[in-house]
Image (cartoon, rainbow over all chains, first blue to last red; front, side, top):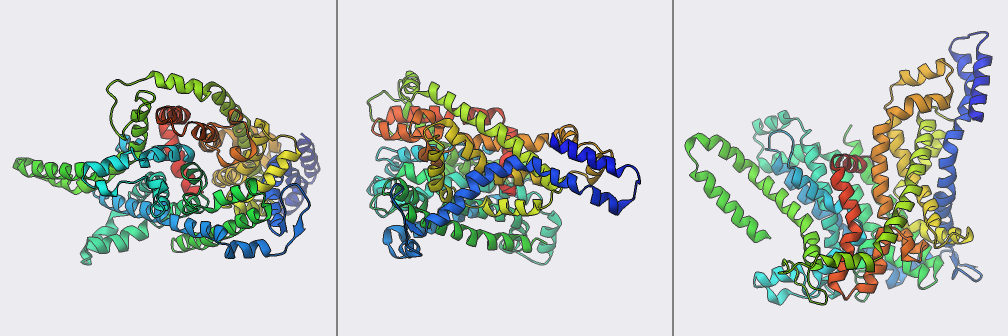
Length: 316
Length: 299
């Protein structure tokens, strides 16, 4: 309401002379500051519950603190620990391995599906298929983890299928297997991302000018060359989106892993998200937890920013 | 699964080669489409198999050991009623709805106002505020949880829905303001200038011009926020100990650790916990698909 007063006042002073542009702008200045009243509630919530928390995480990461007693400044020791203690470094390596399942496989599948769908006239209209492809997007990761824990169990679908095709010897409790657990967890990520990537890329491929394909064909380009020289560049924007979103969900994964394996067996599926949680709320190592979270955040930004630039720069 | 698909291709191929000449054009077109269609069908089946497997397990007799994908001879639909009571779904529904109602309307209002101030009113330093929001947009929740726990404890709000609602609003801001800003920058410039020449107050032009125009953008943002709030997991786990005061997804963790050995009840309960979002999705499918695709592109 005080915004109105400020603005009305400004409007009144503006009346008499009716100057043209420049003075008018100057007079609107107070109004522009009053506009902050609109942004203030958002700034307050953001500042107090988001930005402040981020900055405090950075601060905590330089201390050794159990959350209750006194804290000791330890400099970069927590960061050194992150890169030297196997139980802190391993989750980071695992997170990068998960990118294969969360990003690479879904994007490749989506690309191939979109490229083969290109021959279809008009837009992709399989309403039922669309609905089903979207389903993994709307159920929480926690529920996906419960569903797949059942899929992977000794009586679950995966082993059932293996038995049906005579591969009995391969059956196992997948999430309890030291060699396969991480890949099995990753495959849940594949399930979560494939639908969205496929739909995004199909919607993108419909926007590519068909004349480009004609031209490529006249130049004697075969199907593979057309794919590499027309389809992939034409989908740059959509590819950028798929890659960005899925890499973030791979590196920052928490709910899927926490419910499926809690990082087990023997730490083979431990990811940074779960390790941060356990360090802070089980082991009372708040400094180390924050240092790992900060490293994770820096890694994400360090990967996403260049990727964004890559996908945008070429677009123009 | 793959096996069925391959045999599917073969029969379809044979059928089209048998078709009479007049149909050759259509059949060759169909053959061109076929690999794509098969891939899509495979992906669609892949998307639904885990859910169907949960359903068949949930319908098996309690105490039995269900097999991956097999329709029980005598489906036990009352398992869902038992799971409803065991998982305390009534209480959870109330808690989740309360949290969504606390988070979504306020987040929508204040983020729209902030984006309006930044994009239309062009407040001084607004660009810097926006840049700050953008910088924190990609940061994972993990970097906020430890201090947030301390903060909420200091406020005396641990283990309460309010203690979850307030941080969620704050965490929503980067994406929400970003989303609404993307809408407001597309508003025709004449609208803004017209209102300032008239001397109409910023609040009036917000209420009467810009808010009605922004309705589609706000409603897709609302859907995305409903989804992310309803599915809140990490934050609920950290800030709320009592599973009955969490969101549905957060409660799933407590339910899973309690009934991990009772496969029938676990699957029935998990399906019930997922059901509300699936139902809302099926009802508002068009809007959801549009919002999710757009949301990904903008994010």
